[in-house]
Image (cartoon, rainbow, N blue to C red; front, side, top):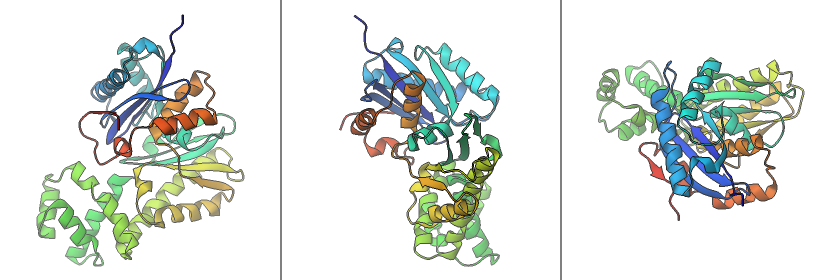
Length: 341
């Protein structure tokens, strides 16, 4: 009697790494999360150790062994150049996590989580940023290192810069000042700036400044609004550039907005992206994904294994997902198994 096989999806980003396992019908049977696994140096062994640990924790949560996994897709931030894929794949294959596996840039997981069309564009804005396209002729292009601006890091950096400039009289006053000082635990801008210059404000603390920028912009602060508009112009520019490279500007296609930045309150960011896209690609459709990128990785695994992703499969995935806290970007440190509500 042949035992059932399962499928693995992994999403490794700058803040967190997630893994989910499902059967062929889409029932998620195990999951785990851990710290970020993005890496841009030559030796990816350290971040891949995180990916391996998170995957093994998901296997344990499901009560499965690696031979039970027919195929796994590892969608990883930092897998940009061809050698990035090769180095990661070598390490992951040696770890014996599945019968077979694929390594892809994490942006393609975001695209698969948001569209079922055969071609389209994804803009990824989480801790970092990226954009990718699948062209009508099947070509796959990810911008990778060419995407130099965007994501929570840049929003936080812009907020800090705006507060410092306002204090020095080099920029307009902004409600961000009190918000930033309170969030970082400082009484004065000078004290905060000295700590910033001295490297005493951690990246995790800086990243917590991203959601308040949306809140302050929604309340009418022009400085915060300008930060989000600058972000929107950069991110929409990536989508337009990729569509132009693939001769898609006159076609109807989905532009999937994937990542935690797009969860910020208020319409300004997404409405600005929509406006800019409409100017260059009038038939493009903005899509907010129904699933998190790790589910896109799982669906990519099903696709690669020849499993038909039907409405029934998608419904089973949705019904068996971990709770929202499992996907929370602000809790990216330390391992936490899926657990059962």
